[in-house]
Length: 105
Image (cartoon, rainbow, N blue to C red; front, top):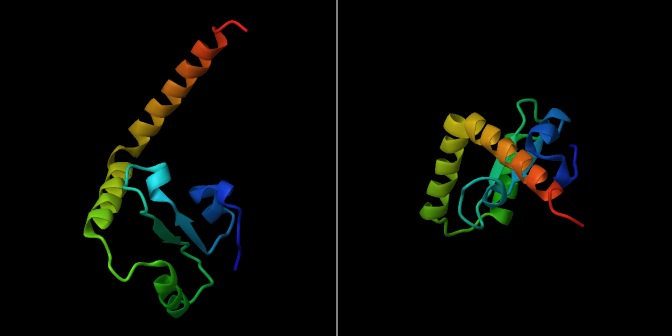
């Protein structure tokens, strides 16, 4: 079982061999506050029963279907529009850098 720093990021954490990654989807994508996703690597060393046993420790006993719908919408948006949105984000970041450089002082 590998534990990696949160700052490693989802894709890189999985690429670095993490068995499981918890993604605070409400911080990174457009889902509602308090929603998160659990990602398992294809080659995870964790047995399914261990994950099923651990999930209730962090999962609500009263799931919110509004939160689950927001997770599904965020997942759909990234699957269908993620490349475009990422490209636009980088363009905005570049424009912001350029404008900040123009500020005297």
